[in-house]
Length: 416
Ligand SMILES: [Zn+2]
Image (cartoon, rainbow, N blue to C red; front, side, top):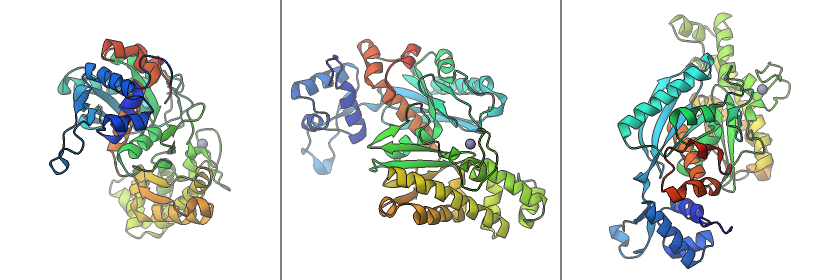
């Protein structure tokens, strides 16, 4: 514990956010602070209008009369979850409740200015409707993120975005502290705090979407690695595969089993007649993409079923290595492809359990994500609030009473 006047304040906030209302005794136990220190931190929170006496439920009346909790609506953050084809912006309060949100179609191939300009407009509309001034903003994008510089680096599915200063550009346009992270990292944190991963301090979230990525939580903490790209499972090699990947390598998992790759297989199956059903679907106007492939598989099309089975076993093989390496208690599967019927997921399970070390897979739970579309917004909001209350950032705004209108906070703090 350092000697900063705000030492421990972030820990108190973290405990109250993750556990709900606590008594002073419980806060002492959870943070290691002394009684006078806890009282002082609570005094600071009261001055920030962030503290409230916890409501006492009728059935437990009187048991915890002195518990205190956070007042979640004192502030809100703007969380931008950007995909390859769509973006959702949520106004989220400090306890992770979505107050309101906006979604729009997006074309990331048009480059960062158009797409991020749209994000800014959505943020402004949302702010006008919600009222008040947001505390900070954040954006999660589908690409490898350099956390320290707030940029994406050689993003395979965001052509034209390489090195663009996403974080600082948004901070300037929105005039508030803004942070950038990878989408799978954000959703992993969302599922850990609010979804399928609750209670699993060692979990891996795998996003099976247009690309494939993952977010790793170990000991309750999101692991980004040294440069920010820990968990980029989409670019682990599939033995024997030779498909070229936009990252420059060949045989990457994403290049053979990601949504875009499966869409290319679907197109080929429709065009060369190996799947009469896919051909009919596309002749009826559907795009031959991964979801058409899933629909064909659901209707028993042999070529579509075989394609999803193969993709599932390739994904499962790579995840077996992940499980053997990290030994999580839970693997959470999300992203559009995870909803493409049971064939893919059961094939993933089959090869995963066959290949992972017995000790690593013995108690492993493989589940589908619970938050669906909301995972990106909730997880991004979580990342923002964690940053706001991390020591280096908190020190800069706590004496002013609010972090509003402080884009320079973006560059402060740790990558916690
Ligand atoms: Zn690759």
